[in-house]
Picture 1: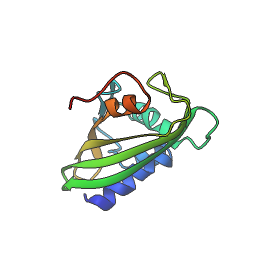
Picture 2: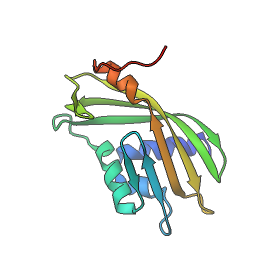
Picture 3: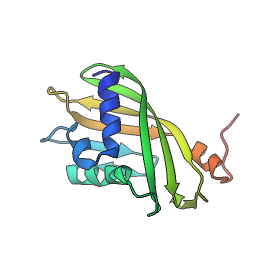
Picture 4: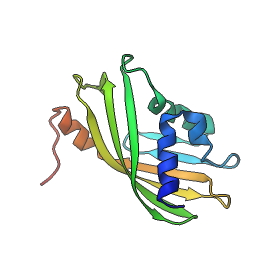
Amino acid sequence: MNKEWASEYIESFAKGPEYVLAHWAPEGPVVHEDPVLGQRSTRREDIAATFATYANTDPDNGIGIHVFVADEYIGDERSGVTHWTWTAEHCASFLGVPTNGKRIQTRGVSVNVFDEQGRIVRELAYWDAVGIAEQLGVGLSKAH
């Protein structure tokens, strides 16, 4: 895998869950984890539901328009880390906090493990939730 693969995968989020799942192993055990959101999915349909939000195209429904960009990929065809940037606009709230129309953005990393065919079998995502809280005026701050 390389940055081109990472960009194609992360841009598939906006296309819909079926495009995301095309990058995942079609059979066998799979795991998607986002500890920041308290998510752990081991079924393809749950993974699809997780990513469905990011394919929203209606700026008026409060779900938001989400854009992910792969900034860097470090790894090979067995495993790797993608550094990414996520931007969201038109979200009514984020983690229960009203956005008041603010555009929010954060950086994160996804660690992927691949099967022999180059399909994802495990993904672990971490991102900067405190930075989003700061953008929304919540009383959290990073240690300086």
